[in-house]
Length: 467
Ligand code: 6PG
Image (tube, rainbow, N blue to C red; front, side, top):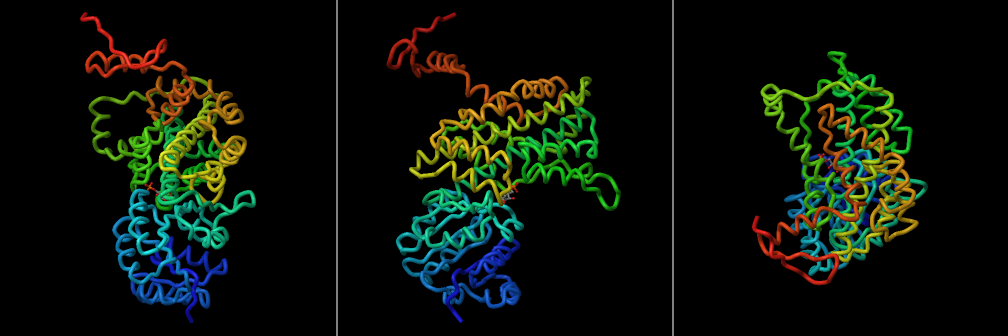
């Protein structure tokens, strides 16, 4: 029996769960995976909703026209190989969707490669991990006209937040994967902030994992509650079954990374957007990778961490405030990057829609995103999230606490680069006269690069003093 609505290629944990989700939402799915037996097993599980195939040609033959093939293969080579095999099998009007974490410039190249064949290549950013794929991911769809015909199905499988599907057609070409990349850039920064809060509690305040747990539960229940804070609380609550010790105390302090955070940081530089905390989070992971070197350096150079002598409850309250203010600063940086890319690429990205589809299903989902969505609903053209009065009042009422935490971390030798860069961003963004007069003065002195003046138009050079 042919007439399947969607072909799914790549049935790893994510792909298989997506197939289950699609089938549960009424779609009939043709399945293919290069590993022998994988498609057959899932096909048997899905019954009349799924059919296993043993080649891409058989998969395409099972699909109703116009055909849609959804790739859930690893980003990179495997996507290009799949496209090369699929293109001769597809007809004008058919579509290929890439649901992996592909680099958005690769997606743009693939869109251009498929276009002459009349095949619509679409890059969909999917967030939420394997559980999200099964129960409802957040879907950042990029691509052309074929997105429209697929939208009802993808709305059905997406997570729901406040009764709305976490699916949006964010723009053409690489827009979907660009937005997903920035989701991950924000994810890296939020995770780094949580990790620094943990380090402050552990080193500067001498707290055990057990003692930290109620603090995290309090944050999870408040304004900044969200999936990542809940994950952190679950990590703190877990004991190693063999030793009975908190597992966190046994995990090596060396963070992995697969590259999307670095791509996001690169993109902020490519578009000339200040997003220091997104970059800081990547640098911080790189520092963790130097574990043996750090251990040797501590032995050779000593470590400056000292205990905080003040009121623990008071500084913990400040820490919660600093975390929320920093989270807002990070979102402001991420949304500013999306806005800048959208303007340069002519992508009609609706920032309010991005905030809304990030409220459910994705890794960075949090209560704060409701407030961010409301800010963009009030003014879709906000120059910066910090300019929204409600968002700014969340920050300004925490400004003093934010500074107290940054100062305490510095004074007591605890590195907190993300907290400090998030604070510096918010400070620099609202400084009307910044340091650049000194930079351009130096540039003109040593390189005759010229400078603008505040009291007259045009470019100028100076005859700089010789002493
Ligand atoms: C998601 C996640 C997902 C993945 C990250 C992890 O949105 O579902 O972001 O894409 O967990 O890519 O990235 P690192 O391995 O680089 O931390």
